[in-house]
Length: 303
Ligand SMILES: Nc1nc2c(ncn2[C@@H]2O[C@H](COP(=O)(O)OP(=O)(O)OP(=O)(O)O)[C@@H](O)[C@H]2O)c(=O)[nH]1
Image (cartoon, rainbow, N blue to C red; front, side, top):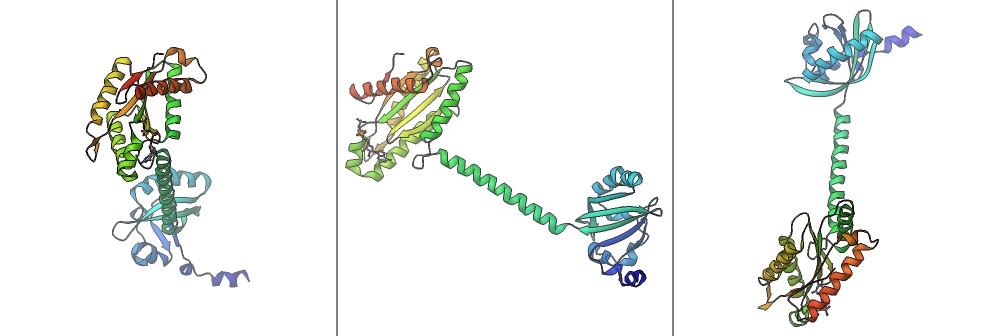
């Protein structure tokens, strides 16, 4: 019965490469016909060649340094990743099971091209997902009209800045900016022109700051800049520059001006629990004063 069943086994019918190599010389002593499919080499041209002729350089190193010692030690090496060389130097990823029997290595080798393709597709789609997630995170942090940080993202960044400043004091300047008579501009020229003015102002603000500063649309026609490591003198110069740069923005020959309220983080603020609110309150009061004193000016909060 067993003999009958054995006689049904046709090694050439298996969809994998079956090889027998000499343990010492690496010569291929026998192989099935699948060698023609897998290595594009005639069956009789393979016999007596060295298996190393069909392995990539990296696989050959792996074979000598890992696979062979493992087989000598345990008699087998199962599911090892190898690269075969097929035809004119074409690489073919494969998986091999190898056992030692009667002084010969018995190999069964399966093509792994489809599996590798699937892995690659999985890796590619994971990379694409990661990239999309990063893009989405960036998008959720931006104000769609001005492309400046939105209020929520600015809150996060400013809280980070304040936490750092708590550990080691860094002077921060909070600059609250409001476009003057913006309602009149909207009413006179329309909402689209108002939007355009908001974008132009945002560009000027963005270009005036460093990467370490926070620039955001705080709401409506109000913006907040937090200058990192800026003392009183630097802040005055910065605000003067902002007023000057605004002179380049016009909407139908109408100049845009801004009012600014400034407050500084002090070492006294650091100890307070609600320091952000306190600093913003001072900046807001200063801005209110700037509006009251005629607009197009900066007022500084006395801490
Ligand atoms: N076009 C446009 N207008 C906006 C936007 N957000 C807020 N506004 C308008 O901005 C105007 C702000 O008006 P107010 O708060 O009265 O202040 P103002 O006219 O700038 O006057 P002052 O601040 O006192 O100089 C309102 O008319 C809002 O509708 C926006 O995204 N686009």
